Length: 427
Ligand SMILES: Nc1nc2c(ncn2[C@@H]2O[C@H](COP(=O)(O)OP(=O)(O)OP(=O)(O)O)[C@@H](O)[C@H]2O)c(=O)[nH]1
Ligand SMILES: [Mg+2]
Image 1 (cartoon, rainbow, N blue to C red):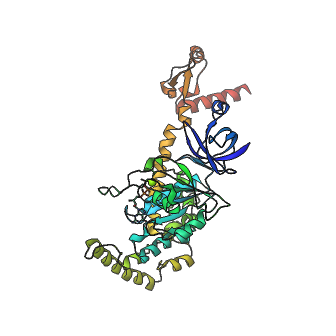
Image 2: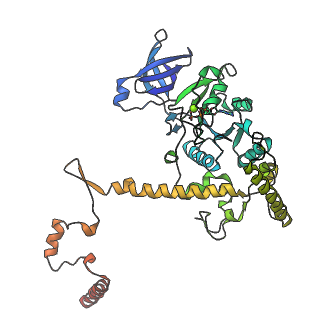
Image 3: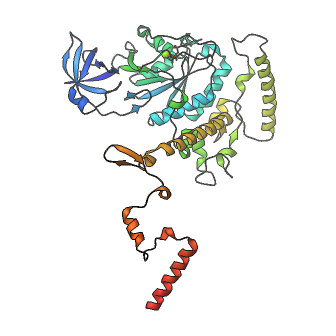
C-alpha cells in the first residue's frame, strides 16, 4: 500500500499523485469510505492499493488525518496562503486586502499569510515602498511582483519551495498569470479584465493542486493551488471581541487599555485610539509611471501630497509621532496607521452583523424547536403563548396551589411575609 496526494477531487473520482512513480492516477474510493461518509478533498493524503501504472488507476482505501483545512475553497493540508492583490487594474483596495488577511488568519491560524502585490509594473518605486511599509513592520512577508515582467519571482520561489501553497485573492488580480509564470506548462486560463467594471471575470472556477518548480527543487515536491475569488458573504469573521487579535498592531496595544473588554471603538482611555497615526503618504510624492500627464487626479494628488508634507512637518515640530518612512515605522514603537484602524472598525462592524445573524439562526434557537410524532417539527412558543400542560391544569384546579408566576410582585412579597409570619406562629 502506498500513500498519495489528491490533486483534484470531484464526483467522478479523484486525481492522485503517487510520489514513487511520480505519476498522476485516476482513483476511485472504496465503497466502504463512501458508506462511512469519508469526504476526500483536494490536498488529502490517501492510502492507495491496486496501483496500475499502465492504466493510470488505483483504489483509495483510506484518508489520513489532516493538519489543516481550508473551507472556502475546500482544500486539505495547506501549509500557507499567498494573498494576491493587484496594485492597479483592479485598483488596490486596502479594506479587501485586510478582509482577506483576517479570513486566512482564521482559516490557517498556524501560518501567517504571505502578501503578494502583483502588477507592480504599473506603479513606481515610491508606491511599492509604501505598500511594503504598511505590512512588513506588522510581520507579514511582502512580495512585490509582476507576472508580466517577472519581477519578484525569485523571492516567491524561495517561499514556495517544498510547501503546499494556496493562491487566493479577488478575481482579475493575476493569480493564474503568476502560476503560469511559475510553470509555463500549466497553461491556466487567463481572464481579461471587464473594463466596464474594472474587475476580473471569475475565470478560475475550481481548485486543483499543481506541481511547480520541479526542476529547481527536485527532491521536495512544491504544490500550488489556484482558487476562484471570494465575495463578501464568503469572508470569515471572528466573534467581535476577537477581531483585534487579527490586527497585530492593535493586539500589541490592547492590554494597555483602561477596560479589559475594550473594543477600541469609542472607549475612554483606549490605548489603541491614543496611538493612531496618519498614513504614510510618501507614495504620493512622485508621479506614477503610466499615468497620462495632466491627469486631474494626479494634480489633486500632488496638491494633497504637498498639504500632507506641510502637515507632517507641523506635526513633527509639535513633537507628535509621525510615520515618515517604512524604516522609521519599523523602529517605531507601538502605533496604528489610520487606514488600518478604519478597516478594523469596518471589519468589527461586519463581524458584529455576522454574529447577530448567527445568534438568531444558531443551534440554540433551533433547539427551541421540538419534534412531534417523529419527523414533524413545530417551533416551541414562548411561555406566554403556550397552553398549560394537563398536569399543570390539574394542579390549577386545586385552589390551595398558587404558582409563583401567577402572582405579581406585590402579591409575591405579601405571600412571602404571610408565609414568614405563619412560620413564626407555628414556631
Ligand atoms: N500589467 C499587468 N497585467 C497583469 C499582470 N498579471 C496579470 N495581468 C493581467 O490581469 C488579467 C487577469 O489575470 P488572471 O491571471 O486571469 O487573474 P486571476 O486572478 O486568475 O482571475 P480569476 O481567475 O478570475 O480569479 C489578465 O488580463 C492578465 O494579463 C501583471 O503583472 N501586470
Ligand atoms: Mg484565475
